[in-house]
Amino acid sequence: MDILFGGATDRADHVRDGRADVALLYVPFDDLTGLDHETLAVEGRVAILPPDHRLASRAELTLADLAQETLPRWKGVRWTGAPEARPGSEFTDAAEALHMIRLGRTLAILPRSLARPMYPDLVHRPVTDAPNSELVLAWSQDDRRSLVASFVAAAVDAAGTASPGPS
Image 1 (cartoon, rainbow, N blue to C red):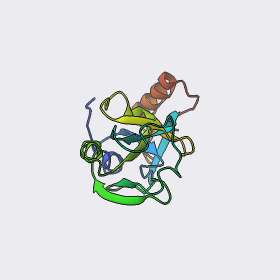
Image 2 (cartoon, helix red, strand yellow):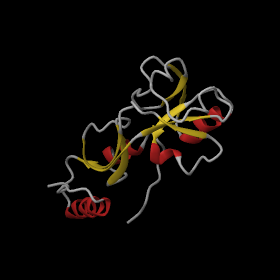
Image 3 (spheres, helix red, strand yellow):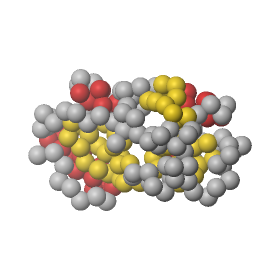
């Protein structure tokens, strides 16, 4: 078994075009067209901001707090920012966006697992009314191989979620 690393915007395409058998994706961010999936985890979202940002001293935030902020657009990913936020620059990976956050040019709202502990120099605040995100294991809806089904079943079992996997 090989492991293929992909950017934030191409993992689903790797499954669709056959370069990968399965992918870890985030709902509602990734496009699941043509894919079946099983949810492995559901988590809240956090705002990532520079330490000197005006909202950094708050214990938690709401989407209304972020309404006038500039948030990144992710190439190939549908907009899931605060409804009234200003879409900022388009990024293909988190490293680019994090540099812009450090410079005070943007903020990001990400699933909690993507924020910590990878970026300890930035401030992470729960966004209490942001829709949860789901970490899902996805595969082609036409793929019925037993190896893929076994992998999905093992991942679901390891995650502690009850689901049968592909059939």
